[in-house]
Amino acid sequence: MHITKFKWFNEETFDGFLLSLLLIGECYKELDLTFAAKYYALAAAFSAVNSNTPDVRKYIPRGLLRAANYEYLSGAWLGFIILA
Image (cartoon, rainbow, N blue to C red; front, side, top):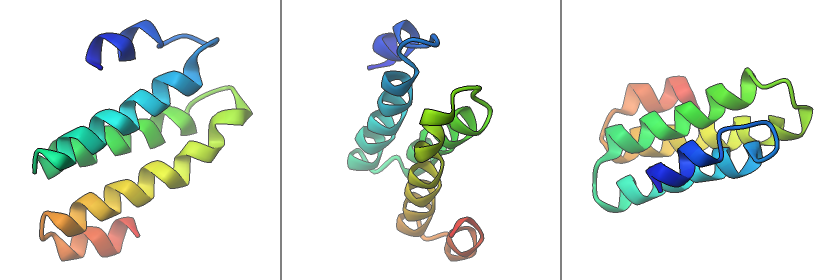
């Protein structure tokens, strides 16, 4: 997935790039690596915020909500409240 992420990092396949970030985060969550999962969810949201393509704005709340969920799963209640 990490190789796919790098291959999709261009303007034509930016949706795929953001989806790969969210999928990598989900994989890390399944491995109980919640900090890494939160990192990738926030990376997806950050990339969507800073993109020039308005179509990818839909990934901002998706990334932030997943990051909040991963924060909650790790036991960081205050971080969950801040992200939520």
